[in-house]
Amino acid sequence: MIIRPFDPATDLPGLRTCVHELQEAERALDPRLPAGNLVLEPYLAELFRRCARCAGRILVAERAGVVAGFVAVLTRVVSEEPDDGGLEYGLISDLHVRAPWRRRGLGRQLLAAAEAQARQEGVRWLRIGVLAANAPALALYRAAGFKAHLVELEKDL
Image 1 (cartoon, helix red, strand yellow):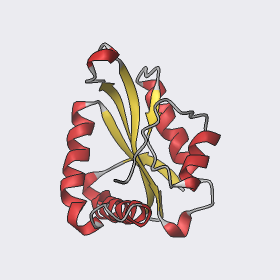
Image 2 (spheres, rainbow, N blue to C red):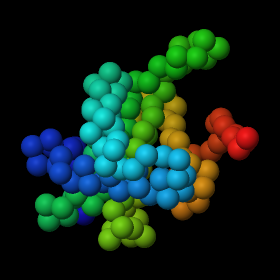
Image 3 (tube, one colour):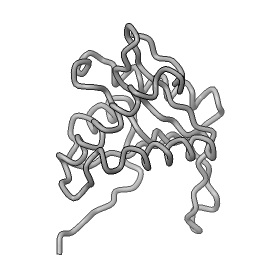
Image 4 (cartoon, rainbow, N blue to C red):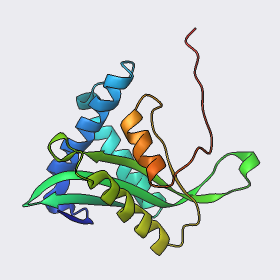
C-alpha cells in the first residue's frame, strides 16, 4: 500500500467512491444526514476549496491503481470564534478506508501521514472530528494520541 498525494488526473474516481462511502457510513450512524449521491459533488467542491484556502492536502492510499482510502489535512485553519483570538490549528477534515482494506492498519497509516504533513507545515495543534456513535473511529483516534478538546452535545426535542 502506498500513501501519496492525491492526483486529480488519476484519483478523482476513487476519491468520489471514498467520499460517497464515507457519507453513507456516517448516514448509517445518523439517518438525518443526506444520501451520499446527493452531497458528493458539493462536498468535493467544498473540500477542494477548503484545501486551497487552508493550505490543505489530500493523501490517498493506493494499491495497484485502486484508491483504498484517503485523508484530508488542512494545515492553516484559523478559528472564526471571537473568543479564540484567531487561533490557528491543523484539521484532519476527512478520513476514510474502504471496506475491503479495513482492519489492516491503513487508518493508522493515513493518520500518521496526515500528522507528518501537518508537522512538516509547522502545525502545532492538530484536530479531528468524529461522530460520537462511530466507536471504531473514536478508538483509532484516541489510540493515535487525540484527546477530547470540545465535546458538543445534542438533545432530541
